[in-house]
Length: 409
Image (cartoon, one colour):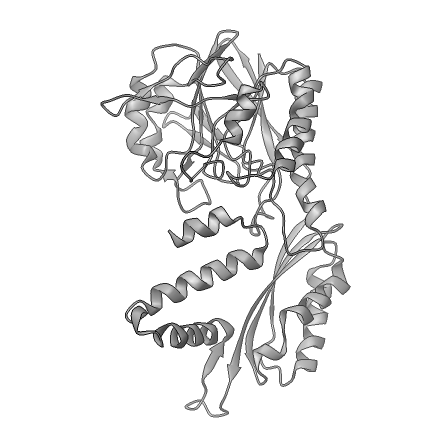
């Protein structure tokens, strides 16, 4: 038997403030479509998606329609697509319709979700095609169990998960990271906490972290695999391999091959303008450095640029649009994100030198505005952090109201 294990597809993600919004939106559907084509070409028995099929739980109708269109060839080929929910797939609002449930009821995916018992344990009911629900599905002798995202305490749940499984030839689909391997900061468990899974499951199909990795038992047996995201989702991922696992099962042994994908080019660059006396001098220096750093970056890349250094002009004079125009001139990017971390030198002598960057100035202004209302006195730091966090999310251009609402809550 053979199957594909992928994860963190993030359908629906784009940059809503960018001219490249439509093309970036299509990147993720093209990537899923290429994996679907590979699955049909390789004649695999099933496809596993270990969570975060969508970028947000509340998706646009066109995203749902494009998902059906992309998965249709897999359904036509009678290749089951077995999924769990990741943290991005969650519906946070009460009584909301889950698009994952709808896809499962329509037969485009098989959504696995366990039932919790009264004593806090797990029960993996057999998947019911009529309702599109269940925690366990059997395909040609392989028993596939599914767990979505269960948060930062996932490691505590491992013994209960193992106790609920009584079959052999088992696969676990689990949206969780493992510390020291996963690059994300939340939703992880310790390697020692994950180790009991190796006694019950022959293959643990992980998701959540966008960097691929493999976890072994102390005796060297590989048992848990994370494919990462096949497309580059966030800046900082340009150094990760991108792809999915193609797995062959023979005589109860799992042979894995990492198949690389072709994501959109991405580049994060940092440029120092330390010592610049004027905006014109800074721009000339910036142009020279960027020409070298962006050479060979690829066609229509995603670029994040950070400018640093102590300068003799006010950082506001080198605004985002001016910096963005320079990057666009040199690299023709699909999308640009600017981080202006310049510091202002207000005195010439060492004792008189004061460094102020944009972030500090913004925080001071917000702190004063919030503190002017006596109802908020004592909470200035907390509310300033909240305001800047919301601002940062909105500037990225890919945040839904649901995520901003979660920050407020």
